[in-house]
Amino acid sequence: MKRGKRYLEAAKAIDSTALYDKETAVALAKKVAVAKFDETIEVHIRTGCDGRHAEQQIRGAVVLPHGTGKTVRVLVFAKGTKVDEAQAAGADFVGGEELIPKIQNEGWLDFDVVVATPDMMGVVGRLGRVLGPKGLMPNPKAGTVTMDVTKAINDIKAGKIEYRLDKSNIIHVPIGKASFTDEQLADNFQTLMDAINKAKPSGLKGQYIKSITMAPSMGPGVKVNAMKVIG
Image (cartoon, rainbow, N blue to C red; front, side, top):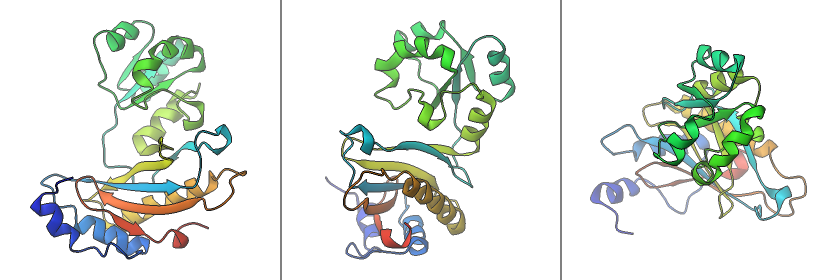
């Protein structure tokens, strides 16, 4: 993959063979965020899990103490009094059956998170082929299938992020923006790692966290010393 001059120049600040503590990793990730916009700082966690086995699947959500720095648009599938509750809680879009053709046929996807009450999952299930591949399908483990739509919306707006294994058994999550302070990013990172640590599958044999890399969205990665951030 061809890298630009700016990327290559930034990469010189990092020792690719070193494992950094979280404070140093945060400082370096911010330093190498040299794009002309406020880059997202991402964390990539390679696990020893095998996601093909249901008992080794990792999926959940955590509210980052300082948020993600991103304005999140929430769509809620609800009916009856839950429609008013969702609107009062600050949902960006609320609806039901009538949204199916808009999403399916018109390709409307102007939202970042989908929340649904359990009685609407029959409707939402019909959108599986559209929402599933984009990671937008509501899920009870992530707290996005719930009757408590107010809490779900408040958590999401406050900086709740979902984490899950991809096909390579890696977890990719944002922990904030390059404009955040070092302390805010370190706090968010530690909160995420505590949650992932708790999510360790009980039947897993061998090493759980194999490597952790922190990187701005357009810049080089910084390897984090996993032993210092997991219990």
